[in-house]
Image (cartoon, rainbow, N blue to C red; front, side):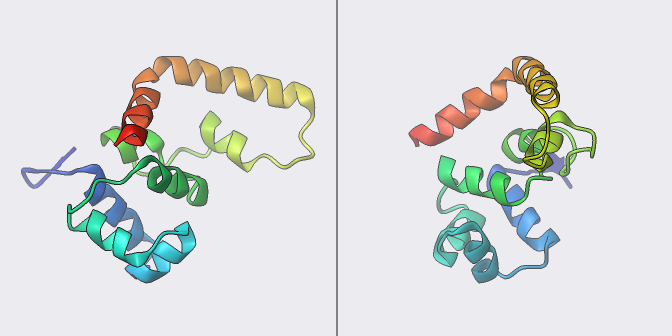
Length: 126
């Protein structure tokens, strides 16, 4: 992703998420269960975010598009009908048939965007 001829890194996208929700680094870190110093180091490009940081962001802010966060592709937020968002927002009262259909849709999406999971694996190794 390029903004004003500047390459936007995953570190910068994490900062954009925090700023979108108008949170301090301390508040953002508390929501994620991460020390504010870690958030500061990520935003200053001292450290790259590890798998736990990325997973915490995606679990806390389920509307964030994981492809955007990791790759800079697409929009910052998932569309309300995106299978990833639908599954994460489903209540426990969902019947098994609906869950199976949603899981099939998600599996299809995973196959189409296999690079996301490869990148997550690479991040966990760092």
